[in-house]
Length: 111
Image 1 (cartoon, rainbow, N blue to C red):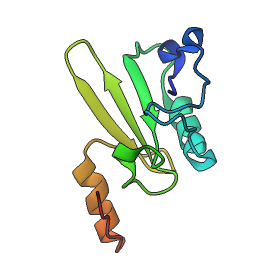
Image 2: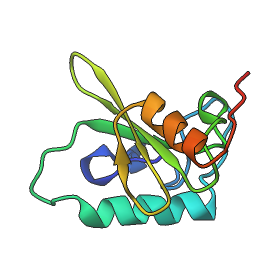
Image 3: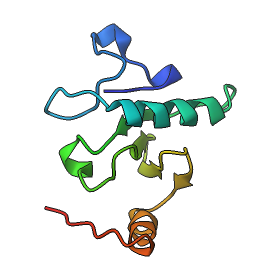
């Protein structure tokens, strides 16, 4: 499980670059570069909710292209999902990402 700043769970013994899934796999190097770009852009002053980063190695997000990252932010009332491309650009909906894929001629097949 990868968590940023206050979201880190080192005290539970999780490695910093693990992702949240039943399989204990790590984020790919390309996804880690994307996470690094996202982290640099965030304000250190902002209060962060519980957040977990996923890449295409996670079964639920296997439709993402290499280097793309899905971030789940959990507040007390809601779960928000955000998507980031390899450049660190933010997309708010899965439909936006799929439309971008379609405009580039990429067809996404999901299980």
